[in-house]
Length: 544
Image (cartoon, rainbow, N blue to C red; front, top):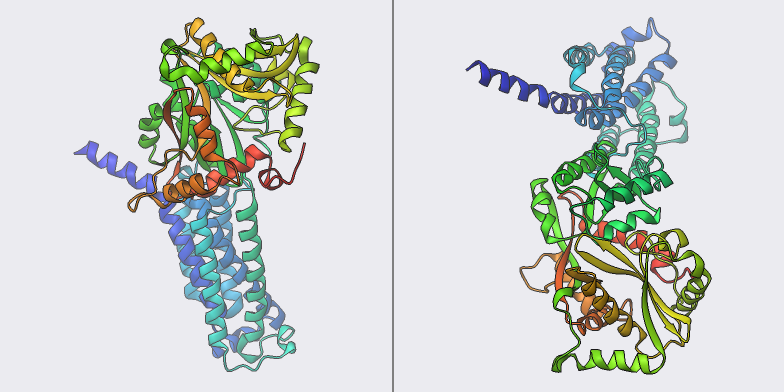
């Protein structure tokens, strides 16, 4: 029985911040109602005998602002912010003082002081560091907007018999305090717009969680070299365009970017399998501490159990083409097209070679010429985040598959190596390369992976592939299936999947996961914007 009592007491203690958040919200709402309704005339007559009308009107204005701040602080109390605790105590005390000064509202002042007295001993329950840049979550923002809108409606209803004139903005204690309501209402409307804009457009933590340092990249590379669980996408952390979160041991890491309220992890944690779930939780808690939401993009089926344990919503976003390297062959009736591609390329003088890591430096000018010609041919810009880009330091970290024609490099790709698996990343070729040069490159890469003893060779993802347009399917999947089937002019989704399908791969699903309160279509849009470098890049308006 004592153990049960202790557990119940502990549960009650855990709920303390939420209880006081509700009380602060209700207290702020009560003060707003008081601010927009006329005070009793006898109270004002008694008060004006000892306090100047200007101070009374100023107290009315400040009490309205205090009410707004209490509603705003309730979100911080809910999230256990230390700063919100201290600020709420101060605002409650000031609110009580100004409730008396604006109209001898002793009952309101008493209620505010009771809430403050109950809150004061609970300091230890508010154990999270405050973040001044933290925006309101959508639910709190909607509540704030609803309360202020209701306050304005109630005020205009209460003063519906007062004839409006410009002089109302400058009068004091006339027209049953209608002028005070107008000034307070205008200020609260402005504050609400500012808070809403900041919450919708802000990126909490983006500046303090920017690109990884060179030391972080070296640590991540060392962790990847010793990893017992990693996907080839883990190498994208070395691009230097993401922040990196390490486990306490430093042997596991996760790469991510912050966009708006969404903290988007690229792929799965790499390192020790035993540290995977703790690292996922650490990332989600870090995003939450900034008022953000953790999003995990391009994760495989193997990690879905951990994501479900975290209570995240999961949706399929495409399929990746994975070749069984052990059994890959160009022999057999069904592989005639692969044999033809190899024979034709080599008849035209093509040769294939995989260069070890560290080989990019001496040939970087040749590689850059190929890359520039490829970008010019596609009238596109370099990608980022979920794809590799042409960067000499990045290319120098991985093996390079090159195709030469008479000693001239005409195509190349960098290869991302993970335990028992390899993947192709950055792929570029000259417009005058032998016909079918990329087919030749992929076939030889798969054969190289087989010779190296790797189990799988990943040709990359086909976005939106495998989504079902069925009546009972989620709207996310149905819209994605429609874009996949009809969006050829935008991206060529079906063509990409058909092209990779010629190599006989196994199609493996890729997913996006986020808290249930996070709109997954917006999270996927954020991924597209990060990958394309913003709206101009995604719409094809930014070249080079």
